[in-house]
Length: 441
Length: 137
Image 1 (cartoon, rainbow over the protein chains, first blue to last red):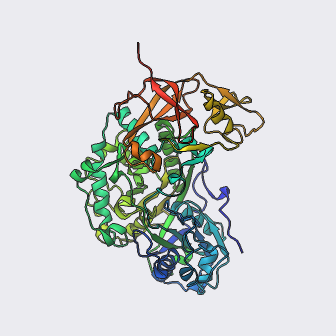
Image 2 (tube, chains in turn cyan, orange):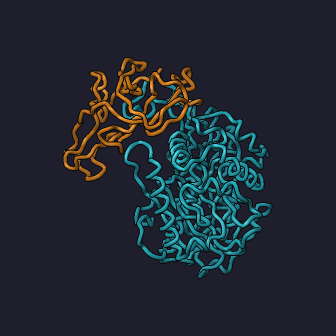
Image 3 (tube, rainbow over the protein chains, first blue to last red):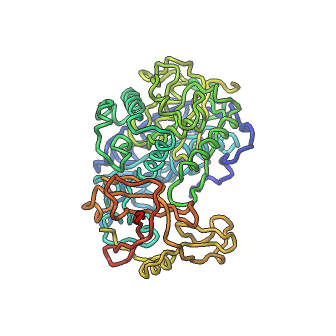
């Protein structure tokens, strides 16, 4: 048995498709997270596979379903945060052999196949559907939602995991070599770090609209503050450190105008959700959170880095597509949890959907107002990647928990948590979901 | 020092031209449209047969820039901090190239300024297109 990537036909990537045909007929009913760590310590019980099994079993328990009733699994096979198994390093056979294996020795360590999961979760006796939504949880969510709506599965696990290994981010492999292949050299000869493209867009944004880097400070502080209220997150679990305005302004540059806090921290983590039909959800343990619609962005930059014009056009289109799919207007949105890793593009997502009516160029001024979870305009109540480490899934977990009123200390109090939006990652390439307390809002 | 370059099949014409101190960019003759980075087929019409390499004038403008303080490339780390700009080509501003802007002080980059093509040499002797701000005199 092999698992395939979802076909493009499962994504709603064009405008004009109308309201999603399965609006309100798919629901999230369970959440599970594995423990986080900064880097893998080489032990079997902290491996990528191990923390993913924990996340999946917690999601099943949270939903209160019999594992044998689960008939679907949607996930992402690729798990690297930028760390790869070092060339020539001996494989960790003690870890590999601690689990049921597949043909890929590093399955469960630096990659994660659906086959590995099924071999190591014998309780999933009813599974008949697996599919990859590659890239991140945002992708897996829309694929799982569409699969349930289309009848490919009725009770489906959705999984995303990330591994991180010892050593500095992106400092090994080809980047440490004396020479590189010509195609890669067209970019990397100039040495731009990962945040560079976003930093360029942000710099142009500030020039165009007369803003500056310091204006990001309230967003960064708010994100970390919210993240420290996320007990499943890395910073809350390991380093409960706030980021003050002074901290932000004093942080070292990575690629100016992006500094250390304009970058998220790569971690080991895993999260799982349980999706099912609206009909079945009524009989499960948790309050269902319904999916009103999903949308995807497939923008293509003309050259290396999407220009600000390209980014703003694509984000506006993504916002229109998501609202169209959900059959709502932006005024119906209670809170937003759009992607923040890198935080310097969070405003593109927010402005694209016109959250609270803000227009292009207005988000940084909006950040100077009350964007906290207690105010009327909560921004990124999950805290996102800045609040809890690089996962690209805190935003989704938070949307579900906020609407279920299970967000604990993060629970928004300035608005009724009725409808939330989440998704990403990139402004010109991502997948977005609209969540609702009601199937027929 | 820039990392060395080992030209591959897709990019060999680009790097060979650079060694002759010329800048060539892939062009689709069917669409009359440049594309960079190069690809096996035209990103607009999908044709591979219509792709050629076209010589550029060597003029452009600075779109924007960043200052790299934490570079992932080992050979460049001793040069930190350094400018890293995005250049728009005069023939088609939609086409971008990177540049360290030799001769421009760090973080004193004139956004929007005209630039002209020069060449730098990478660690293995491969010449690499670079850009220098055009001065008025």
